[in-house]
Amino acid sequence: MTSDAPASLEIPGDADLPPLALDIDGTLTTPEHTIDPRVFRVLPEWPAPVVLATGKSFPYPIALCHFAGVPERVIAENGGVVCVDERVRIEGDAERVAAAVDAFRERGGELGWGDADTVNRWRETEVAARVTADEALLREVAEEFDLRFLDTGYAYHLTDPDVSKGRGLREAASILDRDPAAFVAVGDSMNDASTFAVAGESYALANADEVAKDAADSVLDDGFMDGTMAVLAELVERASG
Ligand SMILES: O=C(O)COP(=O)(O)O
Ligand SMILES: [Mg+2]
Image 1: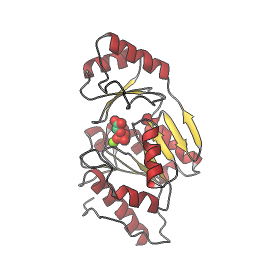
Image 2 (image 1 turned 90 degrees about the vertical axis):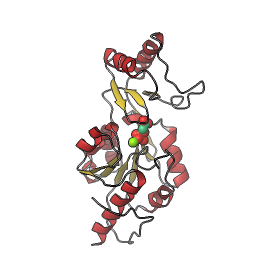
Image 3 (image 1 turned 45 degrees about the horizontal axis):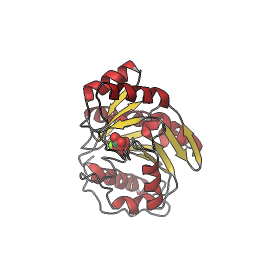
Image 4 (image 1 turned 180 degrees about the vertical axis):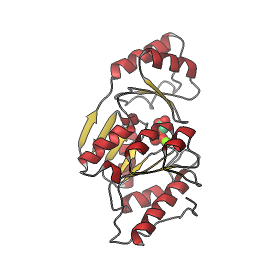
């Protein structure tokens, strides 16, 4: 899809628009990793449910919903946490992940976030390491402890293979009483491939990795929030036409 990324959307009052499953990093952000300011206009305007699906820990997407003024509908920790309209479910073998991290540290590994480690501090199910961490050693412990290793481009993750953003989207859709296939998904990394498999329509941004591009129905010409805005504008146009 080619499009000049719009600065804002004009959504007709009667537009029948689909629910959205949006990744955060690389999708709602700028190349500098900050939230694109258009997010704060578009999310509250969108007339159907918007689910934010991220690898980040629970408080991050909740804070984004809070400050954007939209209902709390989030999938966090790559699917380990789902929180939609007051219903919270946490799944994934956190003890196995902790044992893998212990083994990683015993072999000299460091997660790389410093003493406060605000990246992992509030995690419930999985652990993230900085991309400067020892990737080979992380992959080694992931295999040993039967965990999924994810490289989102923003962090490495050790995740219970039974959870995924896609599974989280099925659960979120069920709480929202929507068909998961009614969702339109946008993302940029391998951790979005499972979302793309569940959503009825999926878009990988120009900045996406190969796994995400292969999994998506379409690959966008634009990257980051420009690409996401192009998808939303196209959906509005379709609903208006
Ligand atoms: O936490 C990450 O590594 C990436 O986060 P994201 O899933 O919102 O892109
Ligand atoms: Mg992402």
